[in-house]
Length: 334
Image (cartoon, rainbow, N blue to C red; front, side, top):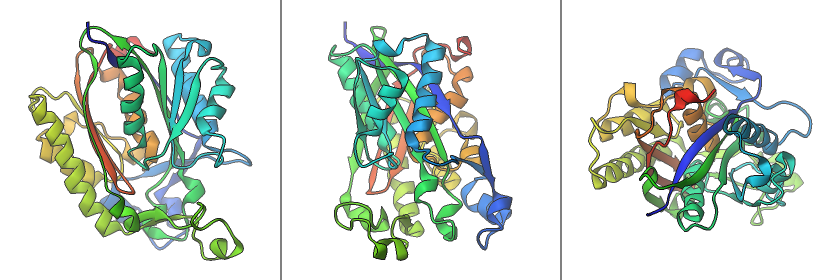
């Protein structure tokens, strides 16, 4: 029988420190009402502490996943970490996570596709399962966005937060798991959403630091317009290709970038808010953490056989959608 890659468990972690809209009012010229009306965000979690990198959250998310599924770290075959804020240029953050959790037999690597990274990594990891190469693949989505956010820039500091999630992929013979995908990218979008310095084109220097070039640069209007159209269109395309209707789609799992983008995507697919996973008000945009954090928050409501459409959009530009049939009753997991 055909092997499909099914999610058999979800883990998550967010830092304890909560940055509220009220606190941001003391940092930049903004208000709680202004932030909430434009983004849907009430608060975001921030990783504090000296030497605390993205891997710290990734490790805790994987540990949570392994504890819930009863899987031993030594049995993991592969770990892919989707992140835009790696601990270091090298080694890969996935390598650091693997060592910390004791996944001594796994090979691991990072994937960078901005906010679409977790979705890209999920599709990539699924191939190793579908071909029969591996039996246990862990996909981590984690970002410490506070490390590249300028807290004097109102247009970006209100949006982003820190967090991590992880899922376990295993073989399935019941027709459950990842069934279809549509992934895209367009490098012409670089100018609208990027980090100006820190890479090989503009290595760190006194000048780049003084010019505040190591932070997220976003041209909001252009990004919003592109995201609304493409994320919504590709979600609808995958749904229609698989004969899914608003009645047969159980959940839309959208990247949590902006409440208005999420609403537009749901409208394009034709489903009501009761079927949309939404937690942007609690976490903000955690980049690669948003989708697995949604799956974790809604896990108890998921049922075996549920039809999920996962959709994301990221800087660069990157975007896409996945059709996933859920493989277990979430209420059975603590």
